[in-house]
Length: 188
Image 1: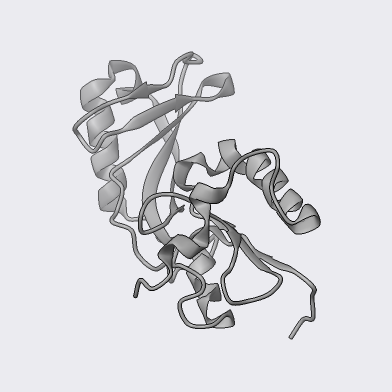
Image 2 (image 1 turned 45 degrees about the vertical axis):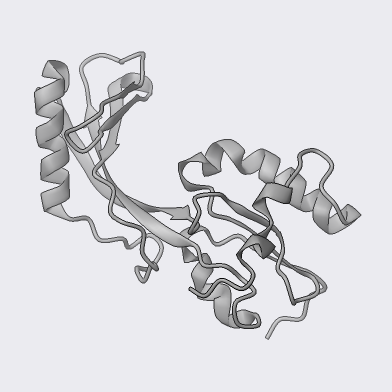
């Protein structure tokens, strides 16, 4: 037990693990949507991200010095049981992703894959992040469920949550659409 005046739950796809810390139903669930990815070493540095519809909806993101990040074939959202940093990488999904890239990119079909990995994106039941006070528990807050936009929205989310904790309300952005109380009375 750690005593605190305030607690902010920011556990991404593992947020659901914290549901037992609060009254039943006060913290909405956050699920993990697993994505696999491949990192290619390419002969030249690509300059544009590309998104394909079909073939697992692969997304191609260039990185510096010729590296290319490719992802696609998302799993359905689930309660994540895997340990952070030890997510299972399924070869059959990576093989499908590699096969899709061979069909859509002659350049990457010749490039070497140096990393195969997977991760979970945190998603809520309605696809909208949860940010704000956890109903029913004084001093408890949550910020999670940002899906693939977590890195982009992290600075604004962090500032809004800091304002909420320190000033009692966020002033930099309206966080009312993200209120966890919108799930009150819904059983999960």
